[in-house]
Image 1 (cartoon, one colour):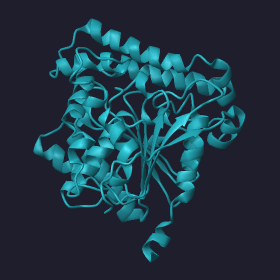
Image 2 (cartoon, one colour):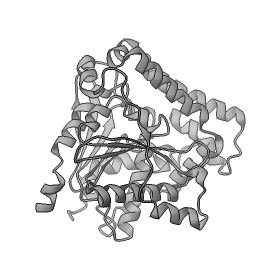
Image 3 (tube, helix red, strand yellow):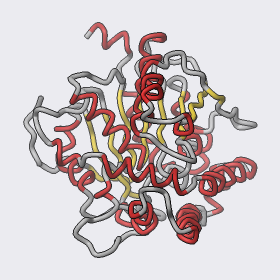
Length: 367
């Protein structure tokens, strides 16, 4: 592996917003776009073992949905806290589907188990590799990136290699320190204030008033991006916009205190990328990787986020075939944390280039 240097190695990407062109290129289906359907896993070995051990319950299973397409590069999508994966990449789905099937892992509303989630991810990846000979790209956003990073870390620590074609990290959160500075008296960001009560009450006994306050914060965060209605109408039909808004609001309303607390407990247990900055534990994967940060990350994550620092200064140590970019929007509103819906035109070009650059499985076998 390459030497673990801390030389800054990120680029600032500025991309013009082209709403109509983005709509044409991304939705793929102009009228009545198909909805993902439930996927019944054909391999359940890992999740059966976790459930059989009593370490997790059925209420903590993630929901797996799929849109089937022909193609050599399937994608597994992991969303952030909200919205669900199915809504997170709504305006990029056409670009993903052009490469192959897309699988969405939506987190349970009433609980969460990292061990069970990793088992489900193990099984799904094994199904795609073993039964279809198509290693997937894993596309993760915000909190979802913490799951992928920890999954890769555990896989590497077990002297195994994750059989993936590549990975995309959008506004990655890798550990609790990205949201809450342990040296600060109180949270500095809106998201930090939203999640801290759930860390303070790991048993799920959260004041109902705080639950409603948290829902208000997430609603406000989503609504802030939705203010530019003219741009959204150019990106989506009124029916699509209504369905998207309803789905996001439903997710915010239905995640209960137990589910939120268990997600936070999982995040708190994950190691900071700085903790495994070692030749013994790195690289996490030799597959191609793209890390995308937004220019306005400080409004959501801590300015001294260890994950952001590690990837903007030393991403090649973690991902030898990786690239890290910060996306800016010089001609409009600043690109916000994980804003794949409202700034899809900024995210689409680097995502498309990433998929275009992936080698086919046949080529990799011959290399």
